[in-house]
Every structure is written in C-alpha cells, then in structure tokens.
Image 1 (cartoon, rainbow, N blue to C red):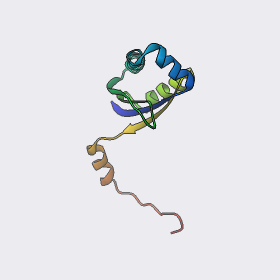
Image 2 (cartoon, rainbow, N blue to C red):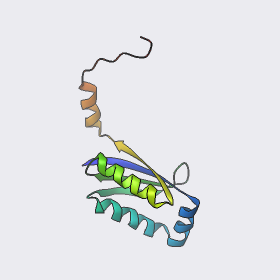
Image 3 (cartoon, rainbow, N blue to C red):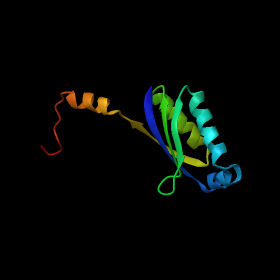
Image 4 (tube, rainbow, N blue to C red):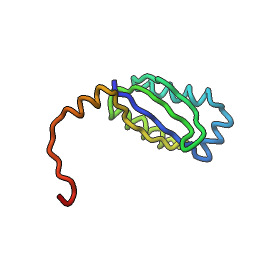
Length: 106
C-alpha cells in the first residue's frame, strides 16, 4: 500500500464541530473513513500552526487517496490536502532511473 500525509485545516464550522465533539470523536471519524477505504492509520495528531491535523496513513493507491480527500472536502468543515510519502528505498530507486531533461532556456 502507498503511504500518505493528510494535512487538514478546520473551517469556522469545523472548529465549532470540533469544540462540540472533541478530538477523540474527530479522530475516530477520520480513522473510520480511512479504514473503510481499505487503509490503515499510522498516526493522527492535532497541531498548533499551519494545519490543525496531521494524519499519516496507508491507502491502496492514489485514486483512493484522491477519493478520500474529495469526500472530506465536499462534506465541509475541513480543508484537507494529501501528500504522497516515499520511503528512502523508493527515492533510491528514483535516483537510479536514467532520463534526459532539458531545463528551460537551454
């Protein structure tokens, strides 16, 4: 399975819901959604800064990650962005691939 980082920021309505429901209930809802798509939550943390939540999870593929992000954003209350995560070994494989690239203006 592929690994992803979901960074989310609550809207005003989302913050009101968080205040009403609490963090554990929101974490449970996120976990249930991810597991419902055949995924697994590795970690789920709330933050103080640029984003309100950070979730590292495994999902079957990129289409599933997109479906999750679209469903979350469409429901309202949370603006979620998904970042694919690569292992060091995957980066090693990427650096071994040969390609020709012409930079702009060259």
